[in-house]
Structures are given as C-alpha cells and as structure tokens.
Image (cartoon, rainbow, N blue to C red; front, side):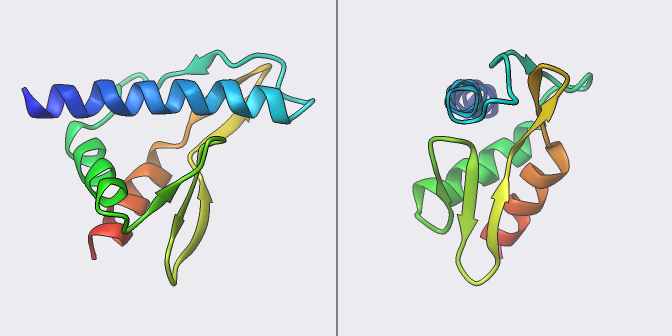
Length: 99
C-alpha cells in the first residue's frame, strides 16, 4: 500500500513539473507526460520521495532535483511536443540521495 502511495505521489509531482516545464520552455508545446511502458518503479519512487522528505535532495517546480555534492539533474525531458520521464535519472537520484 505504501508503495502505491509513493507512485501516486511521484506521478503527481511529475505532472506538476511537466506543467511548469511547458510554461518555462517555448519548445515544449504540451505538458502531456509520456509514461514509461513498465510504469514507475515503486521502490525507486519511495526512495526518491524519502530523500526529498528528508531534504537529502531538493526537487524544484520544473522537475530538476539537486543532490548536494552530486549536482542538479532533470527528471523530465522533451519528447515530441510533450515531456517524458527519465526513469534512469529517477533511479540514479534515488541511489545518490540514499547513499
């Protein structure tokens, strides 16, 4: 159950970030998210959100996450006219933030 909640919370954060990205970038014509075929990994979502909640990572409104001493990473990227989720980046940030 908790993992389902983590996925839903992560989806909501990413949807809000996609809308902000559309507002900020002229080349992004739609905030429509292209979700991965396999969906979001519940464990990665839970670890990512834990890192954000514990302030080991900072997520900004446009979908960039900053991990101290590691850098700033985009969680979304332009895909056609919309936006897609970079699952590899979500997993990477989850691992970096957990470390």
